[in-house]
Amino acid sequence: MARVAEHDTIRAAWSAGRAARNGWLTVPDPHLVEVVAAHAAGHDLLDALTLDLQHGLFDRARTADAVRAVAAHGLAPLVRLPAVDDAGVGFVLDLGVRGVIAPMVSDAATAAELVAACRYPPTGRRSFGPVRTALRPGDDPVAAADTVLAFAMIETADALDRAGEIAAVDGLDGLFVGPGDLGVALGLGPAQDREEPAIHDAFRRVLDACAAAGVRAGVHATRPAYAAARAGDGFALVTVWSDVPAVLGTLDATARDLA
View 1 (tube, rainbow, N blue to C red):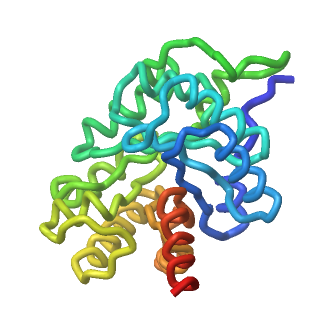
View 2 (view 1 turned 135 degrees about the vertical axis):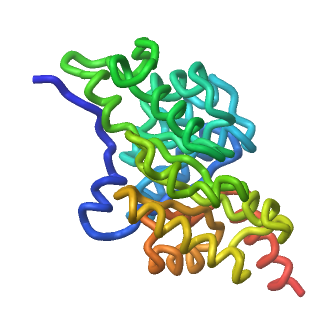
């Protein structure tokens, strides 16, 4: 019997009626990735770990190592792409990631390009080269491709205005809000875990667009409490932990304790 991809922990969370909890990694050290994945899985803290190929330091080899480490501990490996590019999308999907998050998607045409890059013909144009998705007898990389998640990031004013059109693109699984870039685009400056009324209005517009299209909304955060609040708003994929902010937070706490 054909076997499709494992580690569908994100959809398992949705089936359980809760938001999927995502971690975020920019540091490409395989040991760090494994430590985080093992601890998060062992304590049921995360459902997924995203490797940031846009603003992180991952090269191709380190990306492959990190995907193996995340998958080995039963979490869903995700990738934030550097751009919507057929070769880049195909590379990470051939490694076995369970979803991609595409930055700076400002219109429906770009979202459709993303979907096409994720799917094999005849529904898409992904090149067939199952590097890690057909290692075992019975693996079915074509069927697995149909379950890969494709999220388009809403990070520009144009994207926010067109959120309904983007969310309605056939095959797209959802919209993912990047509050940092979106805040810059709205004239608020860079920040995370933001509370400006304009950002909360943007959240509501994205959530409404996703609800109308029957897809899910995700959001980036650096603090668990903020992520939990966004899950309460209706976001289905929330980043609850991020490596560099977490390290800096412990250093700040150390400084306070030493004072």
